[in-house]
Image 1: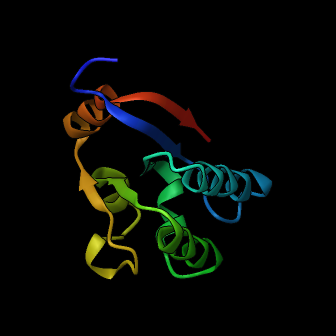
Image 2: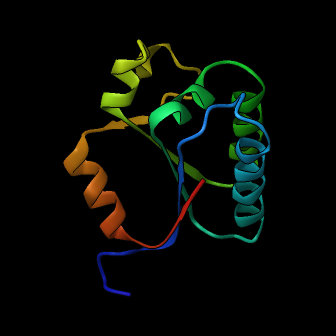
Length: 114
C-alpha cells in the first residue's frame, strides 16, 4: 500500500434499491466492515444513486453512518442523468466527476463492487 492509498475499503454500488437482494447485501457488507472498524467509503454509480433517495436504503445508510464513519460519494454524471442533485438528497454525498472517481479508486487499496 502506498502512502496515497486510504487504509479502508471502497464499495462501489451500482444497483438501485429495488434491484433485489444485491442492494441489501451490499449494505450488509458495508455494515460489517464498519462494525469491524474498517474505514469505509461508498461510491454510488449508475442506478446505485437511487439508494441515496429517501426510502429504506437511505434509512439503512443513515443508521450505518451513526455506527461508523462512512464517506459517501456519487458519480456527478449519474446523478444529473437521473434528475438528482446532492442538494435534494437526505444524505448529501460528495459528487465526483470522472477524474475524481479515478483518483478515489487510486487512493483505496481494496475496492468491492456490487
